[in-house]
Structure formats: structure tokens, C-alpha cells
Length: 310
Image (cartoon, rainbow, N blue to C red):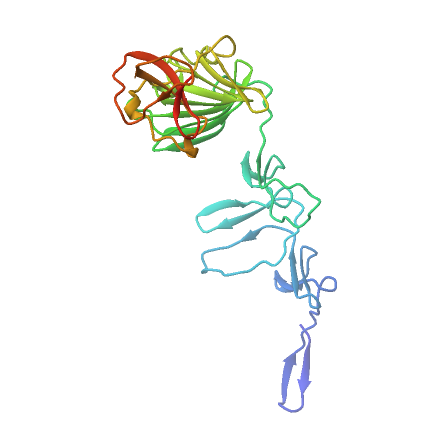
């Protein structure tokens, strides 16, 4: 080790011949008593950027608070913490993709996506998209299953959506939005068990230009045969059927003449059925508010001034 005489102190000073090691920007470190540099540890003084191309070990020396401004890695990096080892997962997928665990690594997909920025009047956006490729799945597979205390209250499967308030047959009611018997629409079961499956419910189905009702029939994958129907025959014309087709009838509740409402413009065109008329002549006036005392059962209509037979 060389020495140089220092005339100011009268001593021999040790001369350090170990100069900067490695290439420009490489951080210096003690390598067996001598300075060294490595391409895996560099510092850019212009951008104030430290580059480490290997793993980082955080020992038990204390807590750390570090904000990383930008990370552009080429692979996942592992950070070893005191007594714990974990993997740093990198953000995956495109902007708006929801992150999920894919075999231990973060992943993103356009099929599980939240559109974040609606800023173009010419673009059709989808706020939340959940897309499942269903090439072979067991019956009952659910795209969405909404539960309270472990009990399903709403679901979406390959046939549509179903929502139920409760499974209690005395208070429950179920709403189905799906396709049964080639009839797309929604179904309401006001009172039944098992979400309509295997039950004999009362309810109605609405789809297209019609509303149908039924009183019994097990619901599995098909709609019970309706026994009533109300459909559009033409513009402004309603047709009553016995179900999907056939002849249906309109039934009015029979009342005594004295129970008819007072005729007025409000009731003009209204129809009714009375049980106590004394005559049956078409267009005869029935005296509302009085007990006619008859026993003839006839239909009546309001002309805006009177109730008349017809």
C-alpha cells in the first residue's frame, strides 16, 4: 500500500488508489474491500431514476414508505419481506379491465370490463360487461348470483333473469325474465314455492303484444299452458283469448242498479251488468239510485247522461 509524505503534518499518508469502478451511472458498492459497479444497479442523475434489474429484499431493518412513480417491468418481480414472501402482481390488461386472479397472477380481460371514460357522442359505450363463453356447461349455471345470507334472491343464467323476494310460499313472489316455450317476456308468480320450479303457481306472462295468465302447471323449463289471454288484434283493438289462442270472454261483476255510479261524461262508454232490471228493451233507461225491483239480468252502458240497457 503506497504512502506519501505530508510536509504539513510531517506524517506519511496512505494513498487510496481505488478509483470509481464499472461504467458511467453504475452505483458503487463494496466488493470485497474494493469499489465495484454493476449494470443491474444504476443511477441517472438527470432523471433522478434508480434502476434495479434484480430482486429487492427488505430485511427487518425497519418500515419503508416508498412511492413508485412508474414501473415498466418485463416480468413479475418477487419481493421478500421479513418472515414473509409474496409476489408483486403487475396490472394486467387494457384500461378499464377488472383485475382477477389467473393461476396466481393478476389478469385483465375485455370480457370483464368497466368503461371509465364516456367522452364521444359517436361511440356506443358499455358501462359494465361480463361475458362468459358458454360452449358446454351444466344446467343451472349462473352468470350472476345475488344472495342474502347465502340464499339466492336474484340470478341471471343462460335463459334470462329471475328475482324472488323470499322463498316463503305464503309471502313470496317471483319475477322471471327469460324465454320459455319460445315466448320471450317476463313472468310473475305472486305465490308459489321453490322459485317456481316444480310448483303449481298462479301468475301471468307478458311478452310481445299480449298478456297471459294461468292458475296451475309445474314450471321447469317450459311455461304452463295459459288459460286466459289479452292481446292486440289491431291498432286500438284488444282481443280476449282462452290462452295463446282460442275464444275468450269478458266477464263483468253483476251489481244492483242502485250501485251503478252516477252517469256523467266521465263514465261515457263504460259498460256494466245489472241483476234487477224490470224491462229488457234495448236502449231503455235504468234509474240509477233506485231499486228497480225487477229480476231481469241485462248488460248496460253509459251514454254520458243515463245508463241504458244494451
